[in-house]
Every structure is written in structure tokens, then in C-alpha cells.
Length: 70
Image 1 (cartoon, one colour):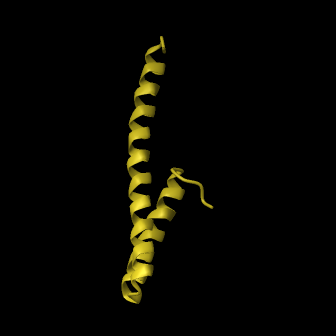
Image 2 (cartoon, one colour):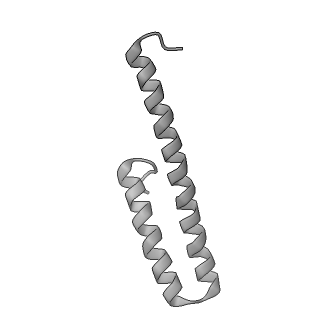
């Protein structure tokens, strides 16, 4: 356990970031799942709209460092 005040604050920050990153990763999985279901459905307009939303959010998460760029 941390003894210094700054170390305790760092632990609180890390815990807060961890929760936010988990929420973001979960939402990314949902976006990918929606794209896959739209592809199997065969509706081309639904595929393009869900795909653009998924790509946008994946790129944003990669930019923030939540996931790797690849």
C-alpha cells in the first residue's frame, strides 16, 4: 500500500481511469457486434451506418490509448 500522499492520489486516479477504460472497451465490443449483425442481416445502409460509427469510436479509443492502433 502507498504511504505518500501523492502515491495514494495516483492510485485513486488509476482506479478511476481503469473504470472508464473498461466502459469504453465494453461499448466498443457492442459497436463491433452491431456491425457483424448488420452484415449478416444484409441491409447495406445499416452496414454502412454502423460501420462508420464503429470505426469512429475505435479510432478515438486508439487515439486515447485505450486500445492498440492495430
